[in-house]
Image (cartoon, rainbow, N blue to C red; front, side):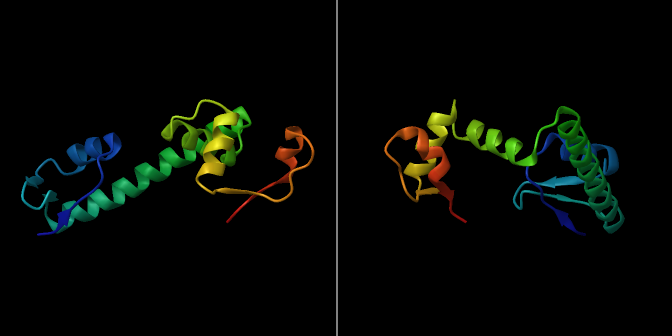
Length: 118
């Protein structure tokens, strides 16, 4: 009997209830125990559901004219409690995510001389 373990995600929790109502939670292993057929159905349905939601997000971004990099920027800002671009630059410099190649005479030139490290 296969064991399925996944990070808590409301989509996956609801899907597990729909697809595998007979699955049993194994407290010690912290995983769902289900038959081979249920496990295959769950994995296939989970992949399809996540692909659908991913494509819907891409459609919404295109409709709003938002680039994927912008989405990643604001997610990262939200996850780190960063409120604005100044805090973002401070965070990036503090954590050595950015290197200042050449800083000119004023701070306005900083945005054109910052190189993002890989």
